Figure 1: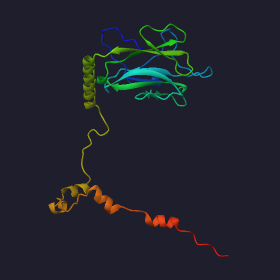
Figure 2: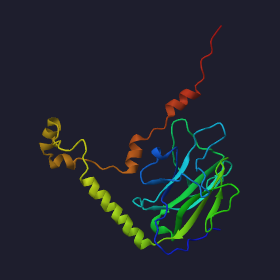
Figure 3: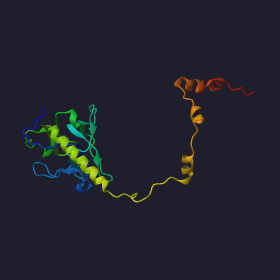
Figure 4: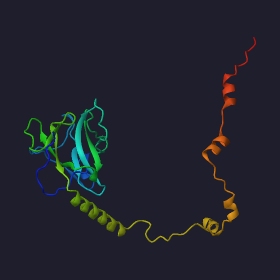
Length: 239
C-alpha cells in the first residue's frame, strides 16, 4: 500500500518519467537521478561486461496538464495494466534498456485525481527502504530498487503554476525569431487571378448534395463478372 506524504507544503507532482543514457541526453525540464539514497551511482548497468548504462529521470513540468498517478514495475510475461504506458527512452545509439522487468506509469489529467506521485528514489538492493516510500523492486537485473511517494494535490496552486507556465511560453513565442520572419505573404499570380473571378450563383445552385444511399446506388458494384470468370473452367487441351 502506498503511503501518502504528510507534509502540507505545496510541491509539484511528477509529470513524466524516462530513461536517459547520461546527463547530456536528458530532455529539457527533466531531472536526472544520478545517485541512490545510499550514495552509490544510480547508473543501471546490464551485466559486468557492459561499461555504459542508463539513468532514470523525471519531469515536473505542468504545461501539458498531466501528472503521474502511479508507477509499476512489470515483468515481460505480464500484460501492461489498462491505462498505463512504458516510460520513453532517450538513449544513445545501440544502447537499450532491459526488457525482463520494465517501468510503466499511469498518466492522467491533473484535475482528475486527488493524489499523484511526488518523488522517486533509488536504493541499493537489500538496503533499508526510505520511510513513506513504496518499493517497486528492481527493473531487469540491475542492483537498484525503485521507490516512489504519493502526495495529495493542491489543485489551486497547481492550476496557477500551469497558467503561469502557459503565459511564459506564450510570451516567449511572441519574441522568438523564425526563418519566415520578414517574408511578405502573397499568393502566386496563377491563384491570385482565380481568386478574383466571381463564381455565379447559378453554378453553385447546380451542385447536388448526395445522400449516402445515392452514393451506394451509383457506385454499387457486385463483381459478378469477376466471380463468373473465377468459376469458369479452363478449356481442356486436346492431345
